[in-house]
Image 1 (cartoon, rainbow over the protein chains, first blue to last red):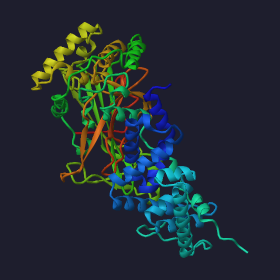
Image 2: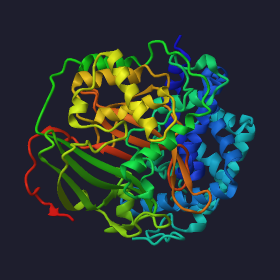
Image 3: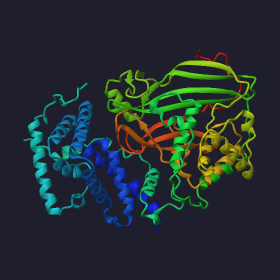
Image 4: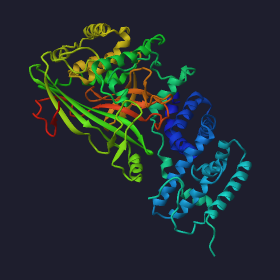
Length: 179
Length: 394
């Protein structure tokens, strides 16, 4: 059996990018690095209690707690909003397929609550199964489904409210000048 | 009839690719941080002893306070080394190492028999890089200076200084962000402290080279962080372990004569600075064995240095330091240091400072400053006179 250092290194190499992506989608890149290191410090201390079949949900749940406990909500929100603006600008600059739709959905995402953003991105961006996402949020699958359904409905409404799904007009991002 | 697009599908399409870029912290560094910060988990520590002696590697201390931007005299460097090493005062008892740092012993074995090179001059090309956050992206502000130290003190010594530092995006991603910001030709430096407040041009290389030629009949080597050397003194450093230790004790006495009070074992990490000086491979091997045997030394792993070269990263212990951004409270950033050695020659490639936490525009583990030896460093012939592309300085 690999020694703890090898296990930890393997765990880090396997999942650090996933934890980083999750943290960035919750609080922007500015805070993500610190969340990753804090998460894996916890992982090191509790290496023996990480469930082998659910390592990623366990890590994301730790990261979630760290985000909640270590960073003020306002700081997380500001950092993420800045990131969302950047992502929208990148989507605006992108001439690829569905660029307008991507801008619209990002703009809709900005207006949603933190909880909705999290539940939607856990499945759409981080590829977690229902079971895994429910584990991260610390709820049952049934509760997760209900929350996801409601969040999805609010996202749909927000997209429609932007009125840009079918249009090609440029999106103006608050606080940034588009080039 | 058109169907409404699935919002989850749209959201998945809008996923930023940059979410996959991952942390900049390597697994080795993460493991090191974890083992250093979980004292209750002694059973999980690496086989090498836990760092117990907080010796600051004295090598290239000029890079440690780069943000102050002030050129430091030898006396200031020595004082800084002293200040860093005084952090050792309350260190707990030193553990006796077993055969740890095998990579360093192996390095010493590899290089010991390499042929000794020579030349009329020892050229030292020094490139300093300093982290600068500007407008949502990170730049490295790079400065350069060179010394050409003659083997024969009857020859003129040459110093070249590039007076205009240059800034360039730190990573490809920073370059994209810089371009997205309109690719400004200049950026503003740190202005709240003693450093230059002028704007810095974005350029690949520092500019405005000035040179001075000087005759020094004493032939004193310019780096006095370990001791006062002539080229002959350096050439006479013993390779026999017992003789070397005796010589290092003599250097320690000179140190104490400068007003320091550290015991010998706390002075020893400073000798890493010798690995950037004109020593033979056998001498470097002997020094590396001394460093490898210190309980404070830890091989971090193979890394790529700021100039893109593969090297062996070592931690010589120590609390690191902090970069002072401003006179205002809470405007300093803790950093830790690594020495990166050439795996082929044992020479110093660079000394690098990393952010110890995410703050003030820096992310934990990010390179905050470095002092790298340019690849042109080493024994060479006489310099061109005047040096090409360089004006005479005062």
